[in-house]
Length: 65
Image 1 (spheres, one colour):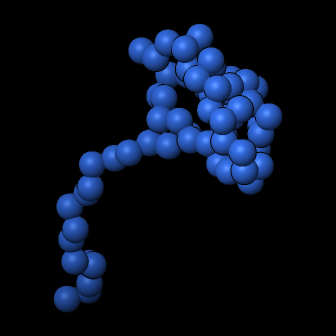
Image 2: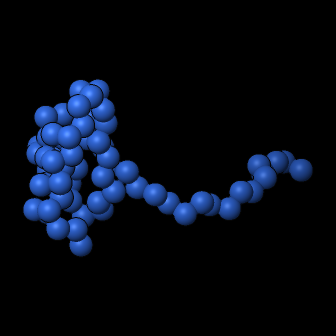
């Protein structure tokens, strides 16, 4: 489980370091709501959740044949 206080502190620190106001900040935390992290920044609409998945098998499209 992710450490809430650490993630909030890190989000605020990154926000202060990233100078571009249009930059999007992403977090891969599965257990902390992204809105909680966004509140620690000055860019509420630019903090997103990012989740990586293992690639799925590729199958040919189904046909009527």
